[in-house]
Length: 115
Image 1: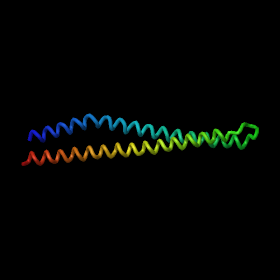
Image 2: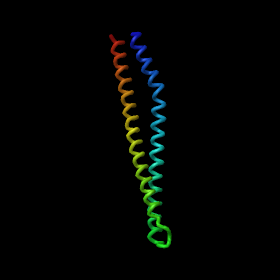
Image 3: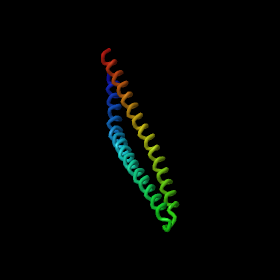
Image 4: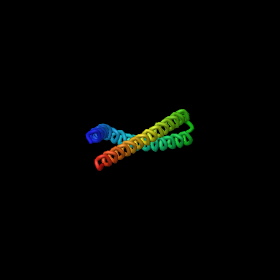
């Protein structure tokens, strides 16, 4: 019985240490992903505006270079967003594994207490 209690306390201790950090990281990832979506929308609008200006004003310097830079930045933002999505999936998986392990330990403790 003492062994089960020690394991339960250890599990609860680990969970209490990691859970706030996991939740904070998860929230920060969500916030960052929202910011990146907004950034991508602004980049798309700027890209459209630059092309419109470039086509309308033949006397202006060539803006194709800047359009290409914006497209490159957009590609990198998309890549980072995909990586963050993978990280968020891993965080959710870790949370699920912690919960399953906690439930498994609790079941074992309950079973040993009933016998």
